[in-house]
Amino acid sequence: MASIGVIDYGMGNLHSLGKSLERVAGSQRIEISYDPEKLLKCDRLVLPGVGGVLACMNELRRLELNDLVIEASRKVPMLGVCLGMQVMLDHSNENGGVDALGLFPGKVVRFPDPPADAVERLKVPHMGWNRVRQNRPHPVWNRVPDDSWFYFVHSYHAQPDRPEHVLGVTDYVTSFASAVARDNIVAFQFHPEKSQAAGLQLLANFAEWNGQA
Amino acid sequence: MLAKRIIPCLDIDRGRVVKGIKFAEIRDAGDPVEVARRYDLQGADELVFLDITASSEERPTLFATVEAVAREIYIPLTVGGGVRTSADVRALLKAGADKVSINTAAVHKPDFVTEAAERYGVQCIVVAIDCKRVSKKKEPPRWEVFTHGGRKATGIDAVEWAVKMVEKGAGEILLTSMDRDGTKEGYDLDVLKAISSVVTVPVIASGGVGNLEHLYEGFDRGGADAVLAASIFHSGTYSVQDAKTYLASRGVRVRQNEIRSAVI
Image (cartoon, rainbow over all chains, first blue to last red; front, top):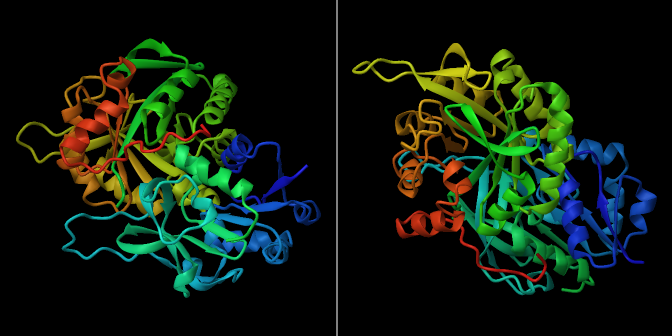
């Protein structure tokens, strides 16, 4: 039986992500685990995450999951969500600067403070529902209308070096990469598991994806 | 661009949705799972649960309710009421809450907010502020923070408190005017504006909604990032979709349901 592994390194609530995957994954088993051996046997992997990047990277290293993610990222379809996306970049400016997994060249930066004369004061965290513009076709966008709404909550955002890695764009203070992809890896800044029908459709697409773009 | 959020609030007492007026006169308003599902389908952007059960022995009932609801909905869920320790925060997140709202405990120990934010992330820490206007007419307006479900005055200025809570790590402020709660007279727009214009995090307006115009005022004049309402939705007077259609017609950016996927 095929399985989807959810990497459980103690950062945040895997309840809703696991539940949403179960809802859409058909007959696939959902394996929520921190055991590298179990995770390496999975046919797809999800790297979730909430909280701060320093604690996240520390926990990944402590549980020896950082090497697992890098190794698996060469083999199986992989999905990063929220902080799980941010740690896929080279480096994050959060917590005084933290080196991350480096699956995508680029860095993670804080939203700039809005100018004092801004018509609308945009708050940080960027919290709530915003639209995602699909930058290019990809199997995960199947049956997801362009400009669909997704639920975001974050203060930092990814800045990939390579434009071809940007899969989706969202406007908040600036236009930022809200989805990235290359080869067999895809990652979202927003929470598909909290984004109603559009989010579940994305997860369903990932659950069927063979890793070919 | 980011949409303004519409958030139905469910007061929970011993596993049931209830509604009250000015924090009193409690009446039954349904089963939490049914009510939550209804709002999810109507296009609610989030849900808030406030546990108003007085006794701590009933906490397991709350966790069971949160679990049952979290299984059924695919939008964020905030749970508050009686959150005093890091263990409470953890238990609620584990039960399926996405955010936890802290009220009285923040007043007793402001550093608890920092502790919770550092451990679980600012994105899941909401500080709830219940306030009453304490200035007399013609005096400069002043609002005071109340705790214990509105029963205890603290002497703390609500605007200063909101700023301090953000410094301590609150990722969002849930601001309830107890003068207005249950009155259907509309939000206290003055305190809403006073706080939303000085804090850097989103502010949810709460207390007093009687019609859709009040929601609009909360955004337009109060500067709210999200509006919370209970009785107008519970009573069936308006659906969440009615509220969004109305707000969109007034030029407010709201998320309208565009896809009905086969997967839910």
